[in-house]
Length: 322
Image 1: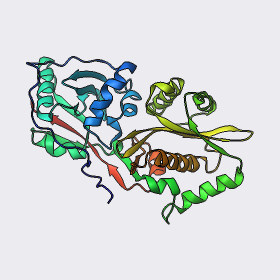
Image 2: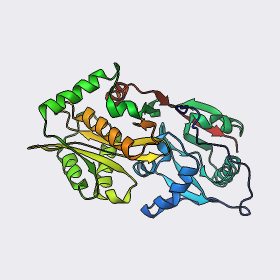
Image 3: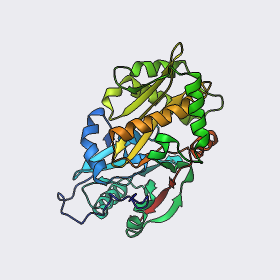
Image 4: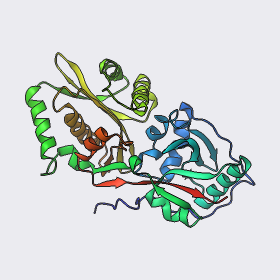
């Protein structure tokens, strides 16, 4: 039986436990050495939204000024409001500590620093627990909703709804019968980086799009440091025409990166399908693929909608009393 999208089937509120006497939060920058440290904390509070994955944090650290504190095997992230980057905000704490205790530490921090306690990009399945702690001014942030798809559908493009995508793949295979799909690895990530560097950005793109492109380049330059898997699509005489990379979190594949040559018909659909099929074979427990938000970009929104998501994972901003 397919698990429900809401709430996340792996999440269970934790019972109160004693922590060290009067701990206080102190935030410092994220480092690469933190990745293996915080991974178990993210796994302890699994979420299908991209914000609680290594890629969702590390690829956006500079954009949202993320810093971290770790207390009681629990990760606290301080950053900026996703809808107003002039305002400091926090993510929902994740890890071993029960949420009421974690919120108490955030309240203490905010009192000491004379700032409101604002949580940003809160997953919908955490709202009830936060409302019980007094959450107010709960506001939906639709531009940051994640697009969730059934992974087996993307691995085959079967069915009427995805017939156009299937036709695009068939067109690509007809035009390029010798096309090669390979896993993206640290050994060939330079090929993807060279492709990225020679591709021009479309006119009118936002500062966010330029930031994301720079971050993709950084990831490819040090691909082995990230818990990512990916794919490369190339054709004879032209080289790489598309690449992608993502991260497995419980039953969900988070696709953090997907780039293609838009002048090569069907390249985007083919890399999407082949990567989904490869990851489903490697990780049979996968049920969903999160293709992340569109950040209000109408072109991205149209593209993500064309794959017919099974759900939009809505996120919220809210405040908590001090």
